Amino acid sequence: MSLRRPKSLKNLIFRHEIAILFLVAVTGLLGGLSAYFWQQNSSESVRINSMFYLTEQIRGELYAQIQEMIRARVLEDERALEAYPEYSRSISERFNELRRRSRSREEDISIQELNLSYREIQGDMNNIFNDPYAANRFARIQILNPTFAQQMVGKFESRYFSFKQILSEQHKKLDETLAMWTRFAPFVIPIPLIIAFIIVFYTRHIMRTEFIKPLAKIVKGAAEISHGKLDYHIEETGVEEVSELANGINIMAKELAESRDAMVENERQAALGSLVPVVAHNIRNPLASIRATAQLLEHTENQEEIRESSHTIMETTDRLGRWVSSLVSYLHPLKPNLRNVDAITLIDAAHGLLNSKIAEKNIKIIKEGWELSQELNVDPDLMEQALYSLLANAVDASPKSGTIKISLIKTNDYIEYRILDSGPGLPFEPTPGKLEPGPSTKKFGTGLGIPIAFKICQKHGWNLNFNVIDGQGTETIVSAPIEK
Image (cartoon, rainbow, N blue to C red):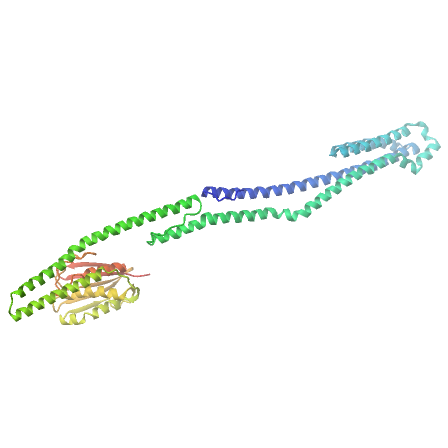
């Protein structure tokens, strides 16, 4: 099995399957070999033992046949005369069975020699059995002699023990083989387990290094890219499919970065395009006023007129300075320092800064829902500035002795600040990012209070809307999401 890294996920899975099949095949082969060996060993042991048994039966029946022959000739026993030929038939069948069970030439020759020895003995017995003169007294005494049978079967006994020696040697070899297998079994049996561990660790290592880890890098890289880090580069490793996926995401991130840069540049140009006329308008008009007043000074000798013209120039210059400062504040990027602040605390702080203006115009403040207790995740300094601007607009828009209603309304997902003034209503429709708010009723206004409030709310993920109610005034609605 090759150890080269797979080129594709399909190839990796295929190798894993091949490894499992190889493990099954090795386990099955070892199990089959073990079963085959034990079956063969058991079969051979049974065969040898049966041949031992058959040989012992032949030998025993031979001695019984000799005894029957002696009884038949000496005692003239009729039953012995009938039993004698049965022994010959039984012994012949057992020799046939021995030949069938034989599995080697050596066994065949030994069985054949043993059978020939029996045939020689059988011939001698037949001669005695059929000799009518063997019944004389001397012959009977000779037959009854114990050494007679031994002399008759001496050659048979010699070949009998030779055959038993052959069987004993085979049995000994079988025992030695069994002992060898038993001795090596503790080393052979763990082989499938060792192979299984090797295959599992190898495939697991390849899976981790070529698929799981590269895929985890892709997931991490995709998360980084989704958070705006379009310059993040995912390492292109692993099998082909994973590597191609990483490459595709890298290409996509690069194209997104290029598109983002182009979009940012286009937005910057568009913003500058919309900002330049506003800046030009808000600077050109005060400068024109200053220039006209300065020209009047050239032809004025009255000290009072000179003082009034000087005051107008300084006031116009201060207004221009305030507008530039507000514009810089609007254009400066915001970085909110978020923390949990109670919703009432925010509106109270903004309201407190306007107490003197409210008292000066004798405006009545109506508060509703101020008993609510809800923390908001917010930069309190920035949001107080936005709420202050919106409340200040309401105070400036309301007539003397008018009313301003400040309400806090809680829904499932939002806290709403509602500021309803009693003024004539906005003469324009404020929208986010618009630096041309229209005419202002404030003597020293810059016109950037609402755009700055829009920017602060957007940075916090809040919503700012205006609703002009006929006959009542303008309602400002600030919607703050409740963090759960």
